[in-house]
Length: 96
Length: 96
Image (cartoon, rainbow over all chains, first blue to last red; front, top):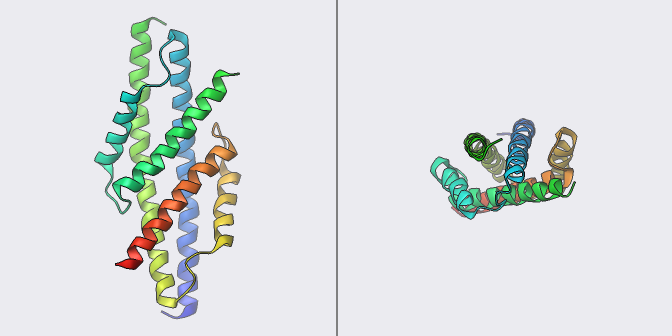
């Protein structure tokens, strides 16, 4: 592969990443909307917001469906951040 | 809404989240595969692995495409973790 070919291939890879990121972001926002709905339902019934058992289910679902190349640990760390941010959003909404 | 209706609605929301998470995970692994390809191309040409300018582009793409409800800060924090994990994967692969 010449340097020119390599740079073209890099550019193509980056375009693909940008596309994947837009789809990731749309899905993350879709997830956030469902989490908001859950917050609304729980608030209406005075149900506890934090349910550690449910969190275990979320991680179990990730582990069961992870085909790689991300390791189980990497996938878990990413979803820990996702869950953190969703929880933060729920808290902000409840203060409105 | 009765408690029974609320619990049913919660269950449906959780099923939707589990589905979204499987799609998120598939996209994250798709992104990881492209990152591996980039690592391979860079390695072949002895190009620098870390390019802060490219990282800025990734974040700019996120900010431009974020329709919410996630805040720009929340979206950024999630993608920071994603990028961290992808970089870690690239490093592990290079040691093989």
